Image (cartoon, rainbow, N blue to C red; front, side, top):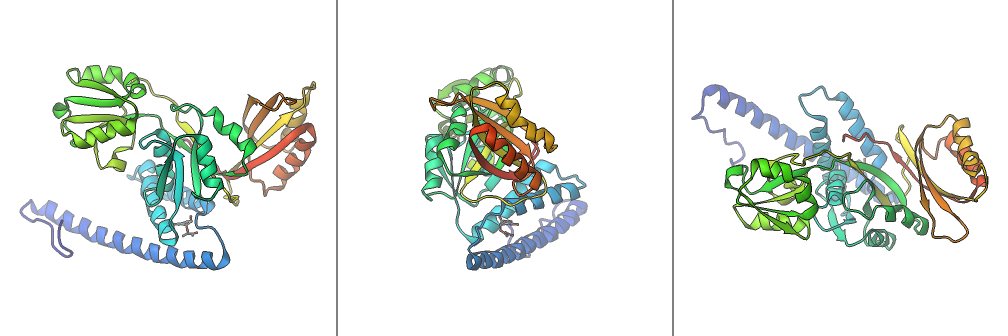
Length: 370
Ligand SMILES: C=C(O[C@@H]1C=C(C(=O)O)C=C[C@H]1O)C(=O)O
């Protein structure tokens, strides 16, 4: 690495040398600005400590990301913008207090990727063997937040997440859509050097055609987890691992190839769970769960207030309850925040139609891309 102030190597063409000098100047400015931003965040952290406010403010964070995405005229890709600022914000949170995030492990799962793309790399990640344990780590205060899969997860056990909200006092603080795609990770980018590919069976099955076409001679080794596959690739120079897209940065490996899955799948939805309710961001979602009596028109009665209040019903899902006198839980997502009067009025009118109703939280609504 160049010493501070060292000019770039000028044995190159003068044009390249000039441009590199400009890039160095810009990098110096970016670094100075990041540190200025961190010092401001530190001051905010002290004020929060005095007033007893929590470090993470998801609403403020989503406002920043939305504003910058709208401001961006390119060529910066919106996903890359998101990653850069998530990491800057994560560093700003870390300077205020250390944060612990529980997620469905092991490392390199899609839940881990969803967690890192939400919280960045400046928090301590604590893998958990089950979704129930994620809830309990956060409930007992051993972790500040948990990240759990909730829809279409490739790692299974998603139905469990909704059931656990019945028993838990935790709320939803944020949502995250994680693309389900695979990268080939290796110590170097050249495919020709790869003799062995380690992967979890699920990942191997989803990338067969690509492997046949681009690495027909490689020996394919099935592993118990993507985390184990990645460890092998970190140890063997001529090996690669298949892991979720974007995992390379987590392990200091290169993506020798990206999006190697044979068929693309819709992104998986993850929830960030925590203890504190989130204030309105201007574009929010509210999630409710309720149980209904077995009588004609019960569901229609419960949904009518939503129509009457002209609230957009984003999703409705039902699950059988384990409670003997109730038949189903309904999980609904409404557009709006609990602090909005129309949402409060609708909930007030839904409640008498239900045997049980719980507000799972209001949180910023995000697009599925970033
Ligand atoms: C700096 C703050 O703390 C955290 C960091 C933020 C940031 O880096 O912009 C935004 C919100 C908080 O999660 C703040 O609350 O403004």
